Length: 160
Image 1 (cartoon, rainbow, N blue to C red):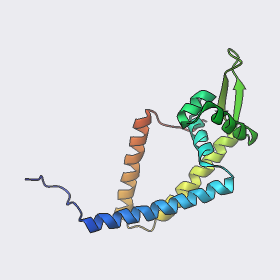
Image 2 (cartoon, helix red, strand yellow):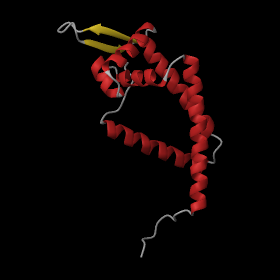
Image 3 (cartoon, rainbow, N blue to C red):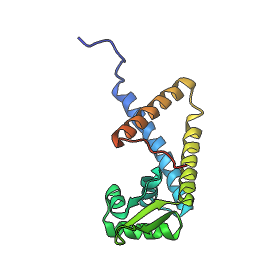
Image 4 (cartoon, rainbow, N blue to C red):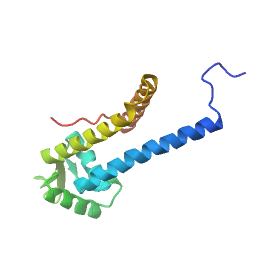
């Protein structure tokens, strides 16, 4: 005998929820792509900025590993970010061959703008929902964030 608990929705309800999830995802992704296009920024360079967002100094090799790219491709990526003054690269005093990369204030400001626009788009989508559904969304987002933080083992904070 099954324990009393939430009723499992039927297949049609599941199908409808999946379709609604796809529609929401599509709206968020299209908005995100539009924003990146306006910023003239690709997804991988943005990912690199987020890797550096915790304020630590990272080697090009460590950044490459975080992004799943080769060191040479990452070095070229960093060159472009340096030209845009979003990151700065320095030779380490102890080992002049070793290069470290750090997010600049301009890079931090860009990430804040991206985060703000994504939050605004998300809130615009969620606000019209009835209060109980908004509460469910908030709980879901909190659960996803908790999982992401625990999986990475640390909370990403903006330097400052």
